[in-house]
Length: 403
Ligand code: HEM
Image (cartoon, rainbow, N blue to C red; front, side, top):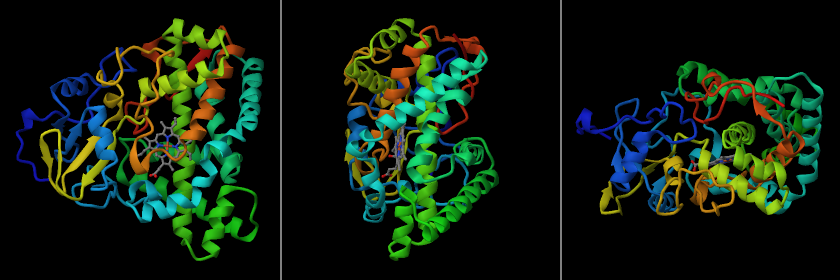
């Protein structure tokens, strides 16, 4: 998009969060939402895509087939300077190719399949809480609990050895950091792609009862290239652990800062309350805080404006989920509200494939940790907690807790 807009008129995106308000979107985003559904923002490369601020317009555009998620299209609002490092599979593709690839793995993430994993997830969480209680305190909850829960689950599901967790967690972290150099990101992407390629090779020779073996079988049948299979593995491995881990840690911090809300989960194990709490924490926290990114394939008229073909757009779910037209008193964390219309998992054809799994993991994690460790408390001041302002996925790097 050529930029003829005056520098001073167009706010930078992403902006900074307000000091001591780590759970709220940047105040300038909220101000833009008050100004109407569409605004322009300026990115790192000086492009000025549309910012879609309201819940209804975000959902309308995310569901619109004239809108493309293809990162290689001119006008796509890229998050950071990039250089290679892999395609991250179908998340950045359009139908029909996106649907073809997504269909190959979606059977593993249906509500029924994921519910059948609940007892195994409960065992993982119980074991980690046993270890936590038996170990020294204070402890970093990210290392001891938030990262291992989803990492163990996705390793089991994909057939990735958990022993390699330091390697894949470190490289995933680099890929989703905003402020690493393109070379560093490409190197981390290349390492993960090579690692997954090796695993696909092993599954071709000795298939197991796991999702990566099913993906490898498609390679054998000629439906997928080996590199497509490896990229799919990278996407599932990164998306499968980073997101949920950040929700567990940031969710715990938010609850510890809202003791009345923490008490609800500590004192009541009603599965409906726990499930509702997960939806509300997803709505309130919005860890995927870089916004859904898209580009118009055709002219699109919306909210009295025309988004021209080739113009980029960003749908930040953090302000979508704080839209007062949909959620009353949106800046209040209220575990008893009905938050199910949130857009924390996106919307439309790219809506999170792993959401049934994320929900069960979070229900089990929040529903177990606070009941078994009822005196859980922060072991550091808010000022000392390192937040992931520099990450495409928001959260905390460390969460020192005691009990
Ligand atoms: C709390 C945890 C999670 C959150 C907040 C989250 C959020 C999201 C969002 C917002 C999108 C949409 C991206 C877009 O429209 O551009 C997405 C897509 C996706 N997520 Fe998740 N996710 C979570 C957990 C998971 C898990 C556990 C998996 C399991 C592998 C997963 C796999 C995926 C995949 C494969 C896509 C791409 C879907 C597509 O393009 O069709 N996610 N996620």
